[in-house]
Image (tube, rainbow, N blue to C red):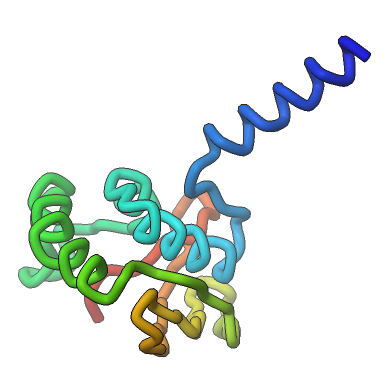
Amino acid sequence: MRKLFVSLSVALIAIVMGGCGSDNTPAGVAEASIKCIQKEDINGYLDLLEIDNSKSKDTVKGKEELAALLSAKVIPALRAKGGIKSYKVMSEEINETGDKAKVTLNVVYGNGEEDEQVADLVKNENGEWKLKLGK
């Protein structure tokens, strides 16, 4: 009985510590990003992004600046809608070369509003799917 309790405790801790963790699929990363925003875990969300400042002048320079933007704009707007009540992956499309994907999610907010979100993802040099910033 004690071994069962210890095993269950370890499993629960692993789940809780995983927070916004994801499996390495486009849909898994997209879902993890919604979970992070739902929990207001900005650092967890930022870890899911592929940030390459060298490719675009419009890309936010640095995670600190992006974190400040999320905290100042996105989180208050989300709270005004009553937070995220639920979400569902509607589709996952991976390109022919297997390095880019689009995931469409349906998001339901606490105030009853629904929204369709499209997440663009890229596979990085380590083979990990990451959310693509910008166009």
